[in-house]
Image 1 (cartoon, rainbow, N blue to C red):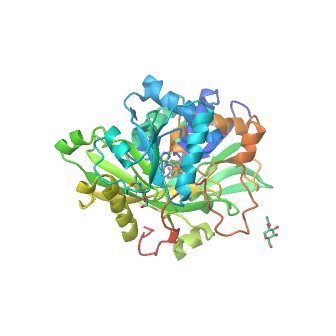
Image 2: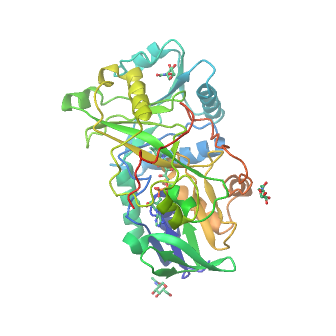
Image 3: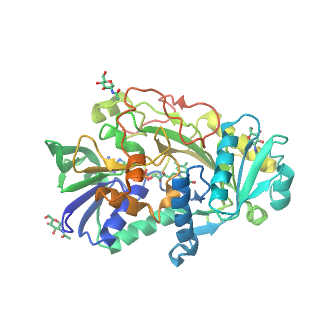
Length: 431
Ligand SMILES: Cc1cc2nc3c(=O)[nH]c(=O)nc-3n(C[C@H](O)[C@H](O)[C@H](O)COP(=O)(O)OP(=O)(O)OC[C@H]3O[C@@H](n4cnc5c(N)ncnc54)[C@H](O)[C@@H]3O)c2cc1C
Ligand SMILES: *[C@@H]1O[C@H](CO)[C@@H](O)[C@H](O)[C@H]1NC(C)=O
Ligand SMILES: *[C@@H]1O[C@H](CO)[C@@H](O)[C@H](O)[C@H]1NC(C)=O
Ligand SMILES: *[C@@H]1O[C@H](CO)[C@@H](O)[C@H](O)[C@H]1NC(C)=O
């Protein structure tokens, strides 16, 4: 790759921007990032959990590196907020329990500290703001004090500003929305946009998150799933009372919470679960010529204030387990946020099998945000063929899933009921 080659990145979310910043900082001079809105997508929200508790040692090591950057670098001073983290599950026969055992084994192997919570009482003694029963008696869990959360909107805006400062160009609106790639014998020469323009280049990177599989074929290796999120308004007195509320996740249900977001005065909770798929509407199918689960093609900038009823109930029931006094308060806002799931929960950083000069960066599987400080390096190493073989293999775009169905078992961290399909009137595409 020459430093003056034109590099075109589709998608200004976490993967696209992290890659753009890294390439620009390595001296690449002609980088353009396109998106409908800048920023937009799954990376934008008030918060994301930062943890290095992973069953998989590769992600544990990367997340530890990222955690150190989040927590030490002055750059993230008003973006990263340290907080203890409780990881729990039902002790009886759940996948969640086995994920927890693997996490603690991996932490121990690396000599990293964690503390077992013998029962719900131990958790409540340590963190008195927890008032619920934590669904005793079948509690199993531990706490890691080296964790936190980031204001993800701010983190993404800062990443975009870093890119601007390094000379990266942006195109937004319909002239920044990719429709398809134009190629000659598998070599892409331009991306065609909604506005009808062609943006030419030598290297292309597809980082369109949950929308990526509606632009090029992914051979069954990704699945866009909607996950539910709820935001509850707190009073000033409650903001104080819950200031020290730890982050907690219940791997049996997938339910997790953040400490109060002091600026917006919102208490946020979500479910790291199997989620919901969505079939494209006929008009969308005509545009994308594919039949894959996808978010609405023309989503408005503001996320719809909606989650399926059963999702809302699960958000409430999870809250009842830790803070029953708030569980009957209506949400100020609910929303679905899109995961780009892969069958194993591994990311994708690979050249697309149909195009020689198209790098695919994504497959975040609901856990990529924490890697923001380090992610770009891995993508650019892959582009240059310098990524260690084991990682290149882990993150390859696999064609071997193409004839399978429902292989999306993930990394063992998901909880709650089976994946469902959204009815078309539940999330209306706005075409
Ligand atoms: C509810 C929820 C909670 C999460 N919690 C955590 C967490 O606690 N910790 C953690 O580490 N991770 C978490 N994640 C995961 C993390 O946010 C994602 O893995 C990450 O943001 C994905 O980034 P991306 O760049 O792949 O996608 P996105 O951020 O969605 O970026 C894709 C971009 O492509 C653009 N785009 C789409 N189509 C086109 C097109 N045709 N032309 C041009 N541009 C296009 C979109 O507008 C978007 O801006 C969570 C995700 C969700 C949804
Ligand atoms: C990028 O390449 C285009 C096409 O060759 C050229 O017009 C433009 O000036 C280049 N930009 C930079 C910053 O080099
Ligand atoms: C997690 O959910 C399971 C199933 O509802 C429950 O048995 C367990 O005790 C919950 N843990 C906490 C901390 O709420
Ligand atoms: C999937 O099925 C198609 C059509 O039968 C076949 O050509 C292809 O080799 C199969 N792929 C795999 C990975 O089994």
